[in-house]
Length: 324
Image (cartoon, rainbow, N blue to C red; front, top):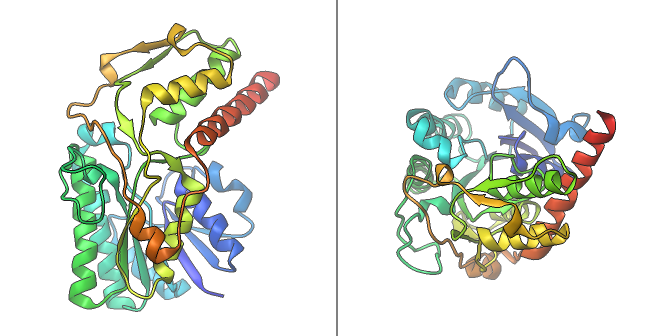
């Protein structure tokens, strides 16, 4: 039974990846940052099948100890300060975790066991003010947030360790991927949750930022399969993962509200407080390399993704109302 360590296992991607690896017969060890209480909601249904341990991307030694105890064959680094707006308020923390944290893991792998296969969660936010459309593995980066800048560092240090120390270190440049497990602070989940609350009479408006921002949105459950495929590939490499389609926040609203038989224009209020200091106007992936070399393609389309998220929040909030 191979063992995989996942940082960020309590997040959206970590929970889906844990499910996938369990289905493939892995022993799954999840790393969660120490806190007075663990937030285990997304993996609560897996706690009898996985091991959750404390660890911190600030502390290289904690990973050396984990390697000694669990002897992993694969390591998936999904942990980060990943909410873009927060990265302007906490830029140093974002750099410490999202950038230097990657170096600490790679150093631990290099010294303990260079044969551990390493996955780094890179981000389409690295493209920022895009220099070409669509964006591929060779598109230059122009990040527009401290988060994007930190992700560029993590991306290049992964490549550097691969080329300098012959590590099997891969970088997945994932475009926006969503699900019912997405955090409520992200715009897609904010919309789905807002639709459900408006439909059930709990609120009367939804305040959003730039409705014309364009993103390449896919389903997180599809994207973790791409992560796994990268670590099974013959050679370590970088791969863009996305749908190859782009949609505006406005389109997301239109579909989400319509699914609940509501007119979005009656409820959505544009609020400049939610605009970014430096906007990323359009992200659009070219995932052809992943299709060609990994045999990967997304299964859940944009409309079905939006409806899935609205249905999930409707069910969740109905239960909350019933139990209140």
